[in-house]
Length: 587
Image 1: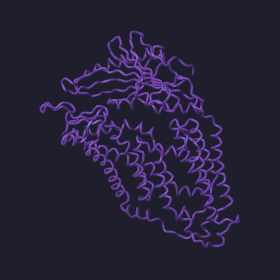
Image 2: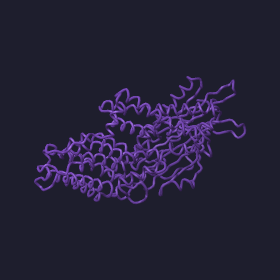
Image 3: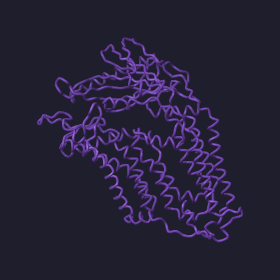
Image 4: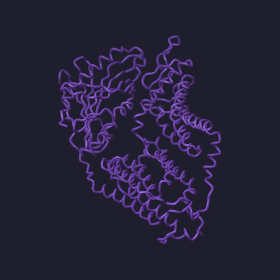
C-alpha cells in the first residue's frame, strides 16, 4: 500500500475531508491498521500450537520454526512466499491507490469460516487449522474492508500464498507413486539405449552380463529415494511456475497451462537426473557418480550433487519454452510487470461511493471478530488428557505353539522416542521354523509420538519394494485392514564376498483408544482430529507391527514360492495374536 503516499497531497476539496472529518488517505491507513491488527492478534500473539513439549507458540512462530528445522530444508522456499506475494501486490499499487474501499459483509462470513478452522486447529493442536484460517482470514479481510473489486485485483497474490504452507501429508501421499514412476521410466529408457536395467520397487540396478562376468547390480544400483522421486522439487517448481505465469502471462488459461506443466517437468527433471547417475556409474564407477556408503549413511559425490541441478535446469528451461509457445512476447510482459503500471493521480471519481463511516465500521468488525476468535479459544479446554490405549501393553511369551524372547527398548530408542512411549517387543519362533518380531508401541502424551515403519526401516538399510493394504481375519471374527510392506536388504557375504539379498515382510496397523484401526500415519492423525472435534475423544494411539525375514540368497536366485509361504505364516500369526493384545471395545 506504499503507493497511497504517491497520491497528490493537494487533493480536491471534495475528497480531502469527508463527513466524518477524515481524508481518504487517513481512512485507508486506519483500514490497513485494523486488518494488520486482526492478523497480529490471531496469528502472531495468541499461543496457538505446541510442536514440541514446550509451551504453545503462535501460528506464524511455529510456521517459521518448522521450515527452519534441518530435516525440513526442502521446504525452506516457503519463507520466500510472503515477500514475493507482497511484491505482486506492490506491482498493482497504482491501480489499488485509485480504488475506493467498498467493503461487503460477505467478508465477515468468510472470516467466520476462518475462525472455525482456527478453533478446530487450536482444539486438536495442529498447525494446519491455523494455516487454513490464515489464508481464509486474508480473503475475508480484503472483502470486508475493501470489497470485491479489491479481491479480484489481489486474487492471484492471495492464491500464491498457498505455497507458504508446507504440505507434509501430500508429500507422503505422492512420494511413493513418483518414486515408482521415476524408477520404471528410467529402467525402460536405460534398457532402450543399450544398458540393460532391472527394476524392483523403487530401485533400479544393472542386469547381469554373463559374458563379462558381471552379476546383478555390479555396474550400478540406485534406490530412488524421496529426494530423487521429484516430490521435493515439485512444490518449488510449482511456486516458480505460478510466479512466472503471473508476471509474464496476461491471460488465466495460459497461466494455468504453465502451472500444470510444472508437474511433468519435475518428473522429467528427475528422470534426467537418474539417467545421469546411471550412465555416470557405468562410465566413472558407482563411488564417483553416486557416492560411498559409510556405515549405512550414503555420502553424496560431487557428480551426484551436480546431477541434482538437472531438475531445475529442465524445469526452468521447459517453463521458458512453454511461455514462448503460449505468448511469444512474454519477456516484454514480464518487463512491464516488473516496471509497474503507469501511475495516475487520484480524482474525485476514484473515491466515489467510499463511505468513511462504513470503512470504520467494517474495520472495527474485523478486529472484534479476531478478538472473538481468541476469546473462544481461551474458553476451550485443551488440557492434554487422553483416553486409555486400545491395546493391552503386554505380549505373551508363549501362545499356540509360538515361543517368544523379549527385546527391551534400545538406548537409541529411549533417546529419540517421546516421554511416555512404551515399546513391548518379542521375537517369536513359529512352529514352522520362521522368526517373527512382534512389536506394540503405545504413544506417550505428545500429539504425534508414533512414526510409520516406512521411516525407520530405510534407516536400517531396508528398501521398500511395495506397500499394499491387506485384510486380516482374526481368530475372534474381526477383519482388520493392515498395511503390508515387501522389503529387501542387500549385504555382502563375508566368506564368498557375494552380494546376498535378504527379503522380509512387515504387517502393521494403528489402533485407537476405541478399537478403531488405520493403515496410514496421516490417516490415523486425521481420524484422531475428527474424533477430538466431534466426539471429544483424544486417542492414545498404538502401533502394532509384525516383521518377518524369510529368505537370504543371491540376487536373482530367490524362490518366489517362499514369499507366499511366509505371508501365509505371518497372517496366521497376526490372526492369532490380535485377540490377545487387542480386546474388543464397545463403540
